[in-house]
Length: 322
Image 1 (spheres, helix red, strand yellow):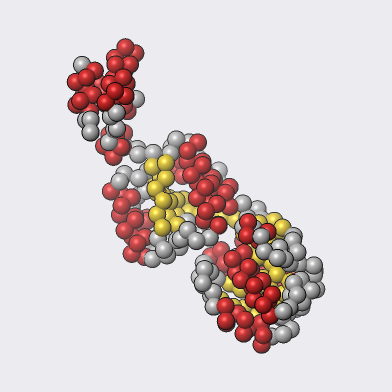
Image 2 (image 1 turned 180 degrees about the vertical axis):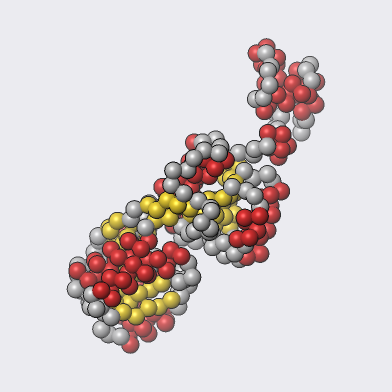
C-alpha cells in the first residue's frame, strides 16, 4: 500500500506539500497540486483518515447511538440522519447498543478514540454522566437527555390526545392501552395525553405495560378475553397495534365494529395488514434530518433557534377505526 512518502517521491515534492493538498490547507500552486493529485491517482494512495482528522481537528464523522435495528422507526430515522449528513459533508458511525449499558459505554469510548466530531443519541441512554463528560457535542432524538443538551422530539402528548379523541368519537367506551415500555419518555408522554382525555370524558381504561419488540401475546390475549367490554385499543407504537390486530382477528372479533385500534408512528406495515391501521404519524425522517442539522450547528458554534424542537404529529385515518 502506497504511503504519503511514496506520493511525495513520485511528485518530487515534500511530504508537507502532499499533506497540504490532501487536507486542502495552505497555499499550493496549481501545477504542483496537479502533480500531487496525479501521483495519488497513479499510486492509488488512500489517506489515513484518522491521521487527517487529528491534523484538521475535525473528522467529519458523527456517531449515532440506536438501541436496535428491529423497527421501521429507527430505519427511517437513520436514513434521515445519513441523508442529511451526506448533504452537509459528514459521514456517520452507526452503533447498535442493544439497549445494553456496557455496549453503550464501549461505543462512547470508541467515539473518543476515533476523534468523532459529535454524537446523536437515539438510544435509551444508560451512561448519561459519561456522555456529558466526553465533552463531545450531543443531540438527542425522541427523548430529552438534559436541559442543556439539544433534543428533537415529536409532540407525543398531543398524539395521545388525538388518539383518545378518535376512539371516543368512534364510540369506544372501555379502552385498553398497550404501552411498551413505560420508562421511555415518549411512551409516558403519549400515555399522559391519552389518559387526560379519558379522565375528562369519564371513560374507563386498563393498561398493559410490556416490551416493545417482544410483548407477551398470551398476556394481552387474556386481558382482552377477561374484559369483553373492551371496544377500543390505543397502542403507543404501531408494532404493538399490529400485534393487537392479530390477536383480535384470531379471537374472531371484528375491527372496527367490535374493537377499534389506533397506533402510533405511521410505519409502512400499518398499510399492509387487514384491516389497515389508523395511527398517529410523527415525521421520523425529518427528526433525523433536524438532529443532524442541529449537531452541525453546534460544531460550527452557530445559534440554535429552538434548543428543544417539538415536531407536529397528525392523525392518519384508516380501516381500524369508525
